[in-house]
Amino acid sequence: MGKIHLFSDLNAWKEAYELVILVYRLTDKFPAKENYALTGQMRRSVVSISSNIAEGFSRRGKREKILFYSTSLGSLTELQSQVLIAKGVGYLTEEDVAAINERLTVVHKLINGLIKGVAKLHNT
Image 1 (tube, one colour):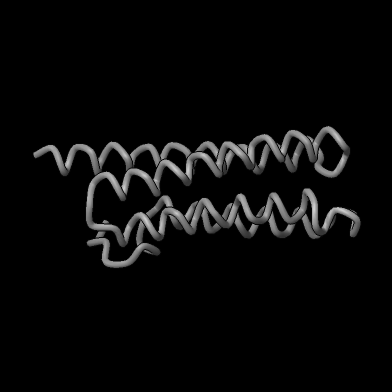
Image 2 (cartoon, rainbow, N blue to C red; image 1 turned 180 degrees about the horizontal axis):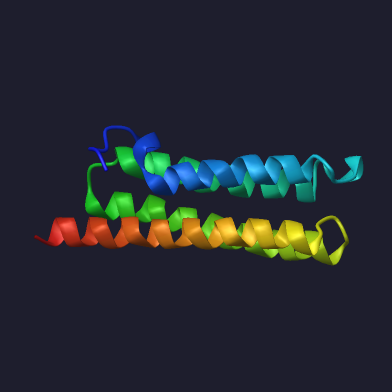
């Protein structure tokens, strides 16, 4: 693994980006009546995950970095709730949910790793 120079070098951001693409593709199939409701909310949540990872990367202070990475986790949890709702109303299949949840788990672990890494790095 090489040096990390850009936020897009972070595995957490790369995986979050893939999650964005997946959610956009799946929500494209939602009914048009959901464009300003569940579709929009899911898209805002998933974009927020990767955006807050990027913003946290650029912050210099430990607290700021952890705040943005933690905000990413909050958006991730929000998306988990929205996925359950979309499944409940019949917009997502079991396979869709499994694909999203698999990627959500990976992103969650990577963000937690960023938070622990920042805390450890700044405590030395």
